[in-house]
Length: 132
Image 1 (cartoon, rainbow, N blue to C red):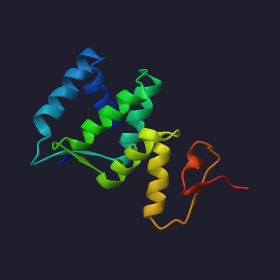
Image 2 (image 1 turned 90 degrees about the vertical axis):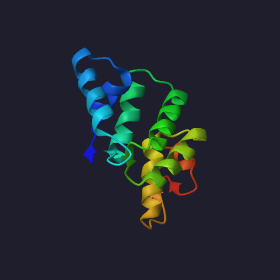
Image 3 (image 1 turned 180 degrees about the horizontal axis):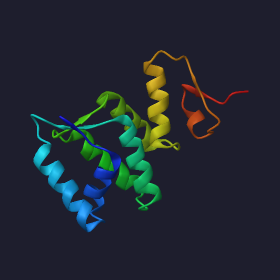
């Protein structure tokens, strides 16, 4: 198994850099297989959403479709895939960012009774509260 950093995935998805995109494509297409998948961490998922939204102008609907595809791709191994799916489900209809839902759900899975945040959009979630 190999690990994949955000910048490799960005080059592969956007094909925006002639030399690095070719290298990223070759790496992913030759080294990632069902038997030997490429590893994507939760941090990379969060960074990927952030970079594609902020730097490339992807819309939320495009990012949701992309994450859906990444999560079902057998050639990729997602860190805590169940949590990634739950965060994606919360983000589909939620107002906060994907990373915020992933954080709150990870805290809940770790046994936290509540996640405190000053993010009013995230605080709409039942397991999140604004500190007072």
